[in-house]
Length: 154
Image 1 (cartoon, rainbow, N blue to C red):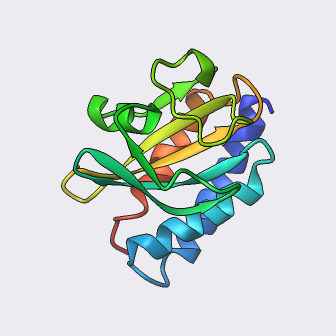
Image 2: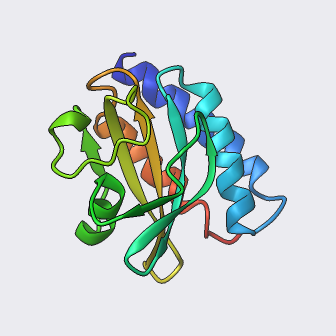
């Protein structure tokens, strides 16, 4: 998908989510809605969901796709995103040191921190693709806008 088409799709999704996320301020409900919308709007999103930060590990939250790892601990892209305090785009997960393979069909990944109103990372949005090089700066920028919607007040 070219950048212009991808950006347009994200803008339509953001507009849709702005309407849907007014129903509740509950972050888990908002995460569930975001995961459902994203997974159905992008055919290259193989797995799309959230992991909550719990001390030195992460616990799976709302998601769409095949069964996920329930607990992540020690290494992996999700934990790296938290410790590095930034989004991470991984073109080839097999080359990422310490990658945790919850499903062997995943080949690329993007992880975006979910921050509360004070900027603390409480969770991450994790999106996997069966194709290599699926994610880019457009995905990063737009998914950061979307994750910011989880804790914003209406």
